[in-house]
Length: 250
Image (tube, rainbow, N blue to C red):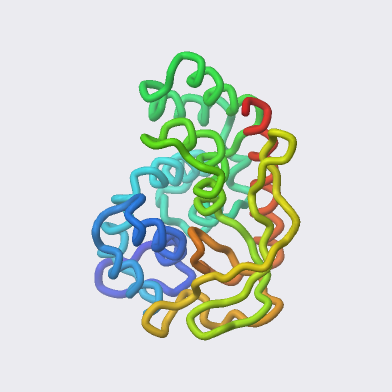
């Protein structure tokens, strides 16, 4: 939901949840506009208004997917909490998007950027079972439309991953996470490994209450939020679904 201009939304709004995932790739210069500090300030303050909606409108990679999910679900607001959750984590709204709708969406956005062969491969993922989830964009669309060749490491950092907190250490956290690997020439999730994650800047972060044993989501090495068990299951399920689809035409 969005504010009416005179007040603010709660921390559970779709706007602030979107900002949690958009913050780090924007900080690194990969997407969005030039208001990275605004993204950070809105989330740590647990507030959202039309100013945040304007900042988020510059994320031209994600926003069309949100509009597609919202339209397919009969929702007017692309920042509706369930729409935002569907794209970044995954939920039942993804099943409301018909294969033809996703096919047309991909054709309208990306056909001119792809060779005839790549266009056939990418668009063919819609009838094969793809959903408008961030993992699909990263694993099948982004790696074929990006201006620079994507490495395994960049794909692993760009996808939203789930990790279990082992220890909180100041501005960082030691987490256990399954990395993206190549196994027998196919993309796969490897065995869980310990790694360091960044959870705070200037003494504040988006998941300050995370503690040992909690599941968290990560984007480009940054802890975005504490995940519920159902959220973790959905994120893992959609990630594995789109890994299988990507491997079909690797």
